[in-house]
Amino acid sequence: MLELYRLYKSWTGCVASTLLSPSAFIISLCLWVCQTRFPMSSPSKSGSSYGEEDIELRRGPWTLEEDTLLIHYIALHGEGRWNLLARCSGLKRTGKSCRLRWLNYLKPDVKRGNLTPEEQLVILELHSKWGNRWSKIAQHLPGRTDNEIKNYWRTRVQKQARHLKIDVNSTRFRDAIRCFWMPRLLQKMEEAAYSSSSARETQTSSMSVPLNQAPQASPDPLSQGSLIINEPMKSLNHEEKNLRSGENWNSPSTSSSHSMKVTHQFPQISELPTSPYEFGSIAYNPKGCYYVDNSSYDIGAFDLSSMSAMGDLDNSASNCHVAEINWVRGEMADNLCNMEDLW
DNA sequence: AAGGTCATCAACCGCCCTTCC
DNA sequence: TGGAAGGGCGGTTGATGACCT
Image 1 (cartoon, rainbow, N blue to C red):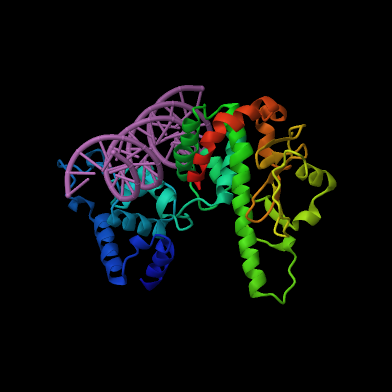
Image 2 (spheres, rainbow, N blue to C red; image 1 turned 60 degrees about the vertical axis):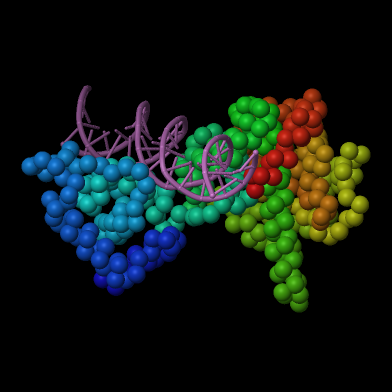
């Protein structure tokens, strides 16, 4: 019994609100055993015969008791066979409902809370590649469910498309994502990485840790992916430096050593635009690097050259072309400030 | 304070694919 | 081989809470 409770605790640890005390757990377990062994006692049964069709299925939000029953049943019998589970567990739910509840909420490794910039970036990246393949995208975001990702896309991303008055599937919107949103997310990741590395430096000032080992700035959800943060100015190649010093480059007045190059490696390399372009403080060069000007800590250079999804954006080479720049700078720029709402 | 509006997200629905008999 | 059942997936809905007037 204690072992079962320990198992139960480990499972519900991430769903603190559902955690029962040992006594409550035992009571719930007894309740479950009674309902399982003596299903006829269920008040919801009607008629003289006990058949599945006689069970009045519950709908709507799950109760704590139902959650407990489901957790206990899966603790004993494992996942799968959802219809059988629904019949035998005492739950008056469909198998599908049980499965959904378990996968989206009760499963121990389900992450709660807001999506991190890294996760948002992966979603944007993979959605541009695969479209609404939510479950496939979710496979690359450990702990996140397809439902959660789908909701994120519909409530946050599509909202922006509505504000911009453009079709969410349009090239323009994808440009907006690629040219503003993704760099902004990368910028946030960089900020987080920098602040954490700064904190580390402060903490371990005697340790000489190269920034490019800074690690773990982001636990990249993509199995093949990695986030590499290099020392900035040193790592910029000649071309990049030239681009940065270009006349349209809104370069900050100071050139601190805070700038970094963030390389987000994705599984495959794709076609990239052939001509440089820039939007205000963000520029993109043919090598597939985003440069984000951030006056608070100088420039960050984002190397997205290996972002696979870019290749699936139709006509990448011309998506953000000059003709688009005016539009981007104009009406979209007015609206893009709203994107701050998204993070 | 109350009513209206909007955003979020858990849950449901329906379709489709796979497996089994 | 075809039908039934199980399960997965994407789209949609509705409850709820936050925010606004």
